[in-house]
Amino acid sequence: MLSTSEIGIDLGTANILVYSKNKGIAYNEPSVVAIDTDTKNVLAVGQEAKEMIGKTPGKIVAIRPLKDGVIADFDVTTQMLQHILKKASKKMGLSIRKPNVVVCAPSGSTSVERRAIHDAVRNAGAKKITLIEEPVAAAIGSGLPVDEPVANVVVDIGGGTTEVAIISFGGIVACHSIRIGGDRLDDDIIQHVRKVYNVLIGERTAENIKMGIGYALVDHEELTMDIRGRDLVTGLPKTVTLSSYEVRNALKESLLHILEAIRATLEDCPAELSGDIVDRGVILTGGGALMKGMEEWLSEEIFVPVHLAPSPLESVAIGTGKALQYINKLQTAVK
Ligand code: ADP
Ligand code: MG
Image (cartoon, rainbow, N blue to C red; front, side, top):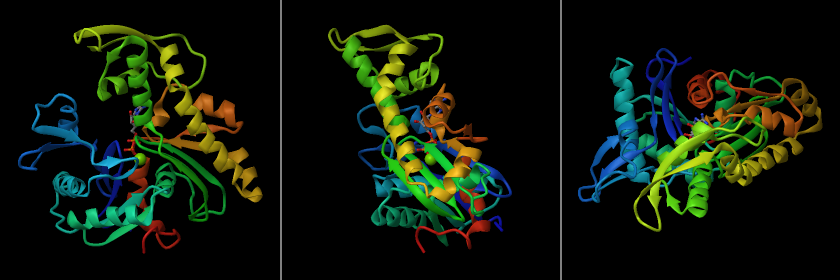
């Protein structure tokens, strides 16, 4: 059981969450840090830093220290975690100087990448650190019975990665992890607008377009959205009206890669568990699961029921927080 000094951290590429069993979600903000490049001081972390992306003067940069689900900048990640642990413990109303932390690692990460996650959390002030497989955390947090001998299939579409895993009896039986997720979809939109309209838009605008009029590959009533960017020819601001059909087209290739990863995992499923999947279906989680039409599109393509997790953006955090009660049955990623 978790005591108050034991917390779960979802160290996501897009969002970081801290979960404690008593207090629930104690921190939930974007994985962004604003840094003064002269002094290397951290100026802001989380939502405040995200607001700064692409808008700061030269010597202040807003960066995302996690890329593709793993740590890209170790020192900044450590500083960010220090800040987060401080803020989360204040929210939880206690001074946990040295909490025990359960943190997850993407199933596709290497041992060096896992070591970096472990060390960053330790340097940020944690006492005991347990790494667990991210898809297992996602499954626990989605309410699946991961410790039973049945096939639990999770598809987690995050910012940097999509992870697909079949979990049975506390362990991963089959999984595929690809470094394509919500960030890639944003980039697809940036490229499309640049190519077709000669207009440059930023990451945040692209994400707003994706959330506003982005659809998986399903029929739908056309939506439009006016967006602003910089005309690459004149250098001046320009407004363009985008249609959800053209956005869907721009996202097509990346979405098909995600589908391919799901298919490949299902093909790796041991025959005895295949029947379970037909009955129990697939659980969709991670922020990308919230894209319009995603459930419908995937269930049409893979011919098994697809269910949205109860809270897709929180599944992994809840799962890491609750993992300790399963830990004896789980295969932990780093002993
Ligand atoms: P990570 O685990 O990598 O931190 P999350 O699970 O928090 O990622 O998901 C973040 C991703 O989900 C981002 O790329 C974000 O743009 C995307 N996302 C969030 N809400 C939506 C939505 N309604 N439609 C499409 N994408 C969304
Ligand atoms: Mg995630």
